[in-house]
Amino acid sequence: MPIHVSRRAIVLPGELLAEGKYEAGANTYKEDDKIFSAVIGLAEIRNKVVSVIALKGCYVPRVGDVVIGVITDYSPTSWQVDINSPYIATLQVVDALPKPIDPAKENIRKYFDVGDVIVGEVMIFDRTRNPMLTTKGKGYGKLSGGRLIEISPTKIPRLIGRKGSMINMIKKELECQVIVGQNGRIWISASRPEYEDIAVRAIKKIEAEAHFPGLTERVRKMIEEEKNKLK
Image (cartoon, rainbow, N blue to C red):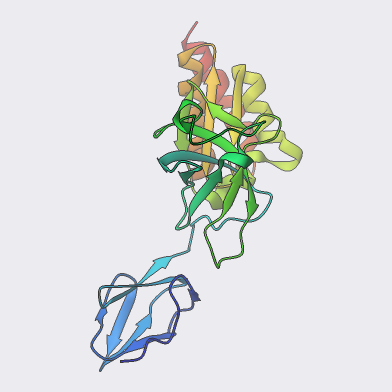
């Protein structure tokens, strides 16, 4: 009963994954006793079930990427971080805090706890292990308040625009702070909750209409109209 791929290996449509008494899971199909991938994705083998995590529109980490994550678990010396990816990231205490601490004497949850939203950078990733993050850097660390939304990671370049034109326009028009993660998460904070609402609608419009020309001006017009309604 051979397995032809390793767990988390990138596979292509039609690629043979396994033979024998295995069950075909998500994004796979079976012919006779052979299981093939139906999509581009990451192979997963669990309890005799062979499946594929589709990568279309999915965030695959790259070293140097700025990402927004949510703390999901912790150990005495590290945190596990959901980065909107098939890969769960790890943030070591040594890569998070400005000075060393003694984990035997200090609980790391006083710095980041489960549910906290953080912004950091992918420091190490080579597909053989989960990505490692760092929050040592200007503007990195815990994000408090504001609004967190998600869009397709493939639409992030359009949201940013040429030389930051689109995102800078949103910041200026709505007098808000916006942090964009390459993993498709965006954090928005404005002095007025109504402006945060408008920013969310603007970003969703960009996601939906990313393939149409003249988008920047349409978004600007939408923002102006929404602001006028508040007067």
